[in-house]
Length: 170
Length: 192
Image (cartoon, rainbow over all chains, first blue to last red; front, side, top):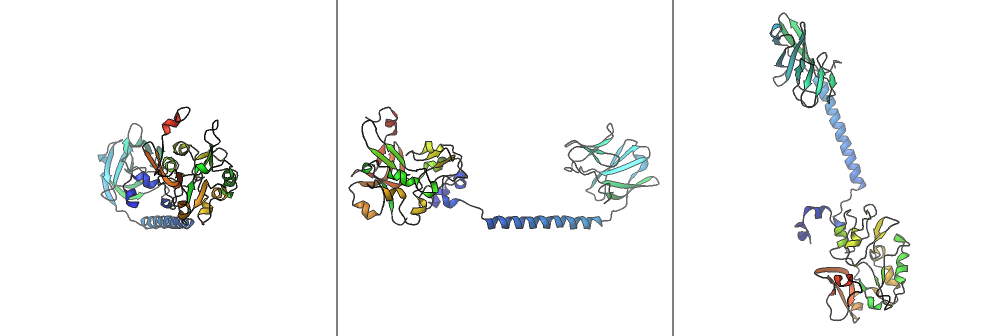
């Protein structure tokens, strides 16, 4: 009987006409599932919390990222900060202002670019737009602002000091 | 189970409908009879026949059920539809070669004979078999049925389709199977 049935298509197994092949979830199984799942959720959240505590203490390297005069007004320079994999974008929207943001869109990590015409940072993937003033979201699916790279001008050099994850400066 | 099998002998049926009433009395489906009771050819004869579900080896009703509501137990009993699943689509009603399943409109559910599962599973006889005065519906052991002249048969052939059942029909001596030419009955007047 069993071997005869195993040759049959999958749907026959899954929708068997035999009562013995029914698989009921018992109350105990459900309780076990709920308990273990909520325990896993708790552990996962706790882990995220611990990770953010650890990250809060990270120190950033101080590095020269550009010469102030190499970027024209309305121009852009790409650089990596703090690590070699972390793409950032440096803008000079007006004569004396320089701002830098992470280039990774906070939605799905596409690279944002500077639209000089609209004076905003635009993500081409899902039309997420960010303000160049503080990196906040103007429209689109992202919910978090772009992490801002805090710059300091030292003579003719622009020096990155740290990355600010959110405007609140958490 | 318990060494008993169900035997249907339509030639013994006297049309008293005790089985219909007895079935209605059951607590699990009070007021709804699961017996298929028929007047065979009313203008010409008083012959009647009472049937219970034949509990096919390969139950067509369960095979066609889109809601997975009809299940066959390990003891070979094809259960009535499961209330939470049955969608009253009538697929089983149309598919059953014996015409056994019935849709009960009040409950929006298919209900059919489950051979008094509450009774037979503990060794008691089904309600209909306990009341049948002529034992047209009988729940007997093998030695008792061997004393009868008719031969129990559980293979029914509908054209090329062979259906093996758990419930036995009593066939005239010398017949190993019961063959029914369905198409012949589809014409008005029945088989010549």
